[in-house]
Length: 185
Image 1 (cartoon, helix red, strand yellow):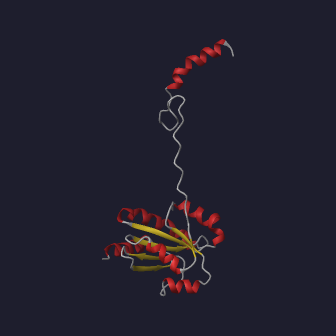
Image 2 (cartoon, helix red, strand yellow; image 1 turned 120 degrees about the vertical axis):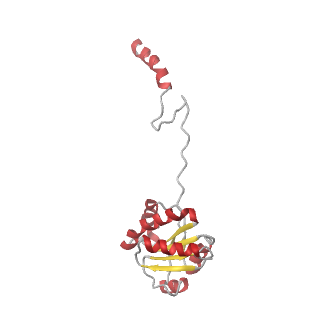
Image 3 (cartoon, helix red, strand yellow; image 1 turned 180 degrees about the vertical axis):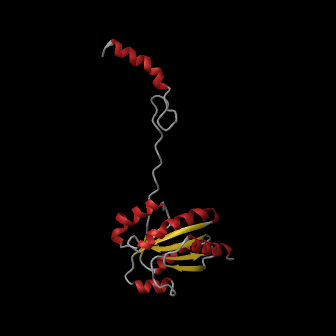
């Protein structure tokens, strides 16, 4: 190393000590940045029967629940999903939660379902149903439901269903159902 290079380094050292990191936060010389918090792992339980889904629903009693049956293979479901996210966000401070129920194949959980949910901003309250007898599941879950995707059930905080919305819906229909659930005794 030449004397000129050494003098240049020595001259610039005080300047470098006062520099900020690219995010605008000062760093002390020799200090490491604080480790970043890891993103919460999305857990998507596999539900095998209507009783299992009812148990997931019961865990949320005390909250208004918007339960949506959807699948990645269902274009209407995928199109409707951002509206559900907006609904969830709009009413989050009023104790309203979104429970998403995927009807995808169990084999697609890691490759299709979880990536889709993560992209949509889902970090909790997501399940996948993997039942052998769909007709039995539908009848045991709600005998008045035709099994269509997407379908959305809205429950009041007391656990009672207040609205079943079959097929793709607009925000107005979701909001009316949520307001009805919020007004329920």
